[in-house]
Image (tube, rainbow, N blue to C red; front, side, top):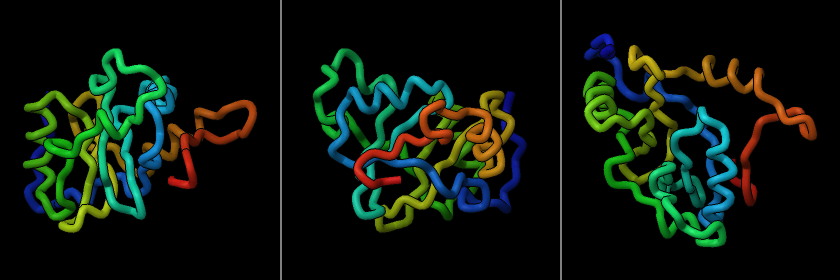
Length: 152
């Protein structure tokens, strides 16, 4: 399946605007815990709003749980500018087999997350993410969160 083309829209028009993030000092074990949710495809590491690394499952390999996740993180090939056309960003995702790109501005500030739908027919919206979050709750807190060290 392929995305429907809409050259007039930018990544900013379709990105998830409040992606969850983790602090740079988290460990591989912390990230593995987040990846237990199969809807999570990429962990965003930020400091003062700046994206400093991304982690996907394949980055973890056999790394011990106590290793800093940042040491395995990367940005290259995992970010897109908010001003990029959605059709171009979608083609990149499909060509690479990825489903997520962190959305940043020219200064590296994290603005959102571009999320390709499982069927590759479009992008997830804030409404989609909100509806899914309402379905998934933890018994102890009543909320689905993976905030670490004050980041969100």
